[in-house]
Amino acid sequence: MNTIILLGAPGAGKGTTAEGIKAKTRYVHISTGDMLREAVRNGTPLGREAKTYMERGELVPDDLILKLVEARLQEGGRDESYMFDGFPRTIEQAKLLAQLLAKFHAKVDYVFFLDAARDVLIDRLTGRRICRECGTNYHVRNIPPKREGVCDACGGELYQRPDDTEETIVNRLNVFRKETEGLITFYDEEGVLVRVDSAQHRDKITAEILEMLEELAGP
Ligand code: AMP
Image 1 (spheres, rainbow, N blue to C red):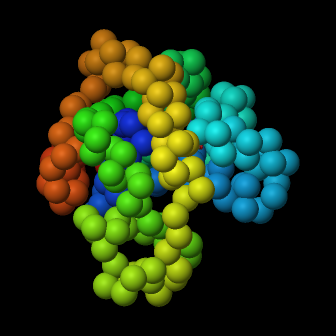
Image 2: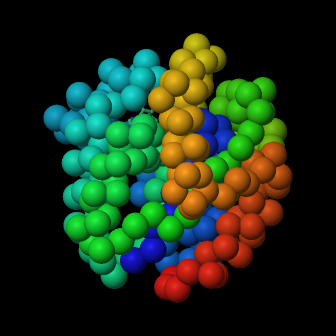
């Protein structure tokens, strides 16, 4: 069981990078943001609780997030390898993840920190569009679909996330700085942090990460 983490501010390209890695490996993609959005869509008790935090761009409480992650790991078990996206987001979550992985005799192998300047992040988030059906990411200028508003991959409708508005974006970036940025030092001290320049083309980012994954045994 290998475990990698995609770490970065909102808009750093975690989701797009995860798509690239998924296409070339057997890593199971665990995006806590996607799982929460699904829970909100399905109106589950967890979804109802998470919704207000998400609308404000605040972090959802750790216990709810851990429940989601633990259930997912238990489902896949030791034979899978995992790629976390958007988790952990606090040092507390990182410690809880380490405890959880220890139950599977596993640890975090690499943390890829996608580093980008604030103006790049804002541009990416305001222009981001996502397929309602298959979740593929687009950008109105940088990664436009062939037909406006329609997914190239599956023909699904493209939508803008409700938290990708200017006001919520500013709050999410502040939350990243306050709550998540400390993880860079945390994982650097553990010797697993790899910095990746997120201003590069997405194919280059994926290639850089894949090269490092080749060193790990497994998928
Ligand atoms: P994301 O799709 O990763 O940008 O996440 C969207 C929203 O879901 C965030 O702004 C948070 O409200 C919530 N969220 C996602 N992952 C986490 C997490 N690991 N911890 C707390 N809240 C999270």
